[in-house]
Image (cartoon, rainbow, N blue to C red; front, side, top):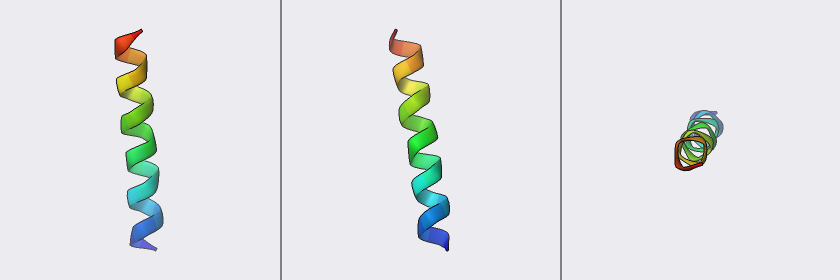
Length: 22
């Protein structure tokens, strides 16, 4: 569903932000 796709995108953004902070 669209919600699942959105959740995956959010997870990737969170991972990317964590990677850039470290």
